[in-house]
Image (cartoon, rainbow, N blue to C red; front, side, top):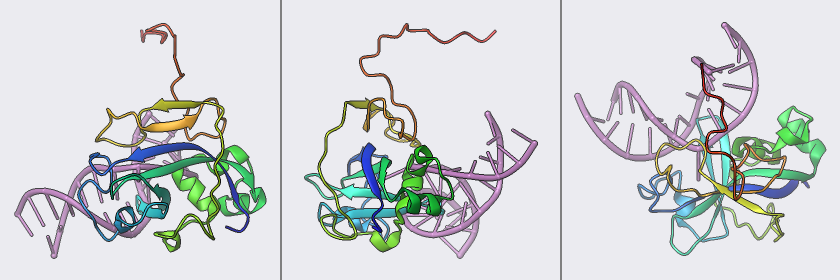
Length: 174
DNA sequence: CCCGAGATTGACT
DNA sequence: GTCAATCTCGGGA
């Protein structure tokens, strides 16, 4: 869209049987796109302020992947103008930020991902780390957050893969 | 019908 | 660290 874009470096999965998913309680006006065809966008309003972009996918209706962060690669100037911020690391490092930078709103809800204004192409990640999802209170035990290991463009750091840290590396509070 | 919580962010103490 | 902004939905009156 407007030549802006980047590499997807962080996602979270939501399943229709997952209590953290918007589709868990069935279809509503907001989440209708989740029950539509796969490879379409689901865009919803978050906290009444931000937009969040999902890709509808999977075998059953009501499954989607939340796009949480991009590594900006195109249209940096346009994204910086929309975000009112210059630092590339702050442009798309969060689901709400990325939608503001790309100009994604309800206008894109339900649109197909294989044609304009979207342009998705496959790519390879250096390494994928897994961790618990962010900001949810239900389904916290399901570690369905995925990100490129070591990327500087994540919304938050991911757990170290194959971590071999000492169990209690934290300094105890006096 | 009314109220509280939420897949967030940024400004402020 | 704490907190407000403000749309959508689910549950209770």
